[in-house]
Length: 144
Figure 1: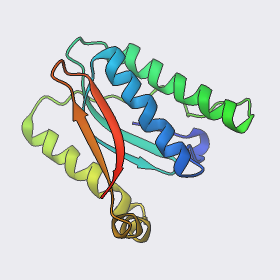
Figure 2: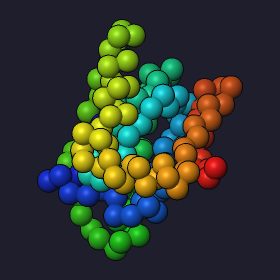
Figure 3: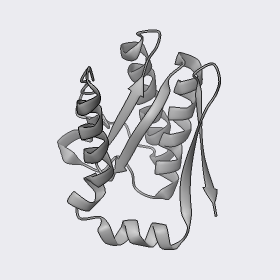
């Protein structure tokens, strides 16, 4: 999880959400991540990832750094995007994993984005996460 500095937006439009997903896909390939779930909110994101190689710190530094570089280059700004280091929690029980999955998937509704979420569903847009046999993931946005 990471949040925009001073709770500012880290996404300004659909192209930024797509950019973050592209960077996540790149990080998944480079660091052999397995992406189990994610939630992208206007001012923060949540990820549930598995790092079989125990390289979560390097992966997240790369992920946040590359997204920040591309975002600031796109908007020609020179400032910090995130409030600081990401927050990581070890998931050591199936029950805790289920609790986090529920929280992540309900987060847009709890954050008041229910109408936007319904518009997205109405537009028949869905996200497909494809996990490669070697554990690397690629993420693609596809229309139904």
